[in-house]
Length: 239
Image (cartoon, rainbow, N blue to C red; front, side, top):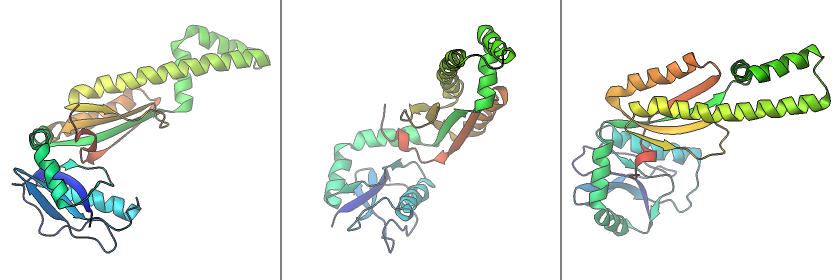
């Protein structure tokens, strides 16, 4: 039977006596050891699908293991032919995994996403550009302007908002990166002007979250949400 992999941690780390994994009924989690490392695994269900129940079960295994020390979490769906193959991978990359676990000790991932409040960002771009503001006032004074004037104005506003998205994403990274041990950019085209994952030392957690709140308080056109603490999925690999 194939082996499902949840994550990797140190063999010396204390684990709960029983951990339930994915599957219906939940499959028991066991460990595969190689040197200083263990992989958290279970049998793989015959039919593996990204159902909400199993996604949550995968996350729960990682969080339970992380309660007593760092874990290199695997993304959902990691299947190996058998336990022996898992052990071979642990042995092959042993030193690199130990190094990453050391780098993740005492740290959690926080995902920060941001978008614009449409009315507030329109006010912001008009306030920052005297020429654009003058055109806006002139169009209003003439009853909105001609169709061509409206189109031209709309294009200028869209360009200004796009530029503000870029500069605001840079502002968020520039403000929060010094408070984190690592930064990863999320995939583009997700509907957010900024999508970052930060690796944050637990001793700096409150300072980091205060900085997130401060970004919104100082820039009201920014809508920002921070999710965490999370297992460090974005930082399981170096670089």
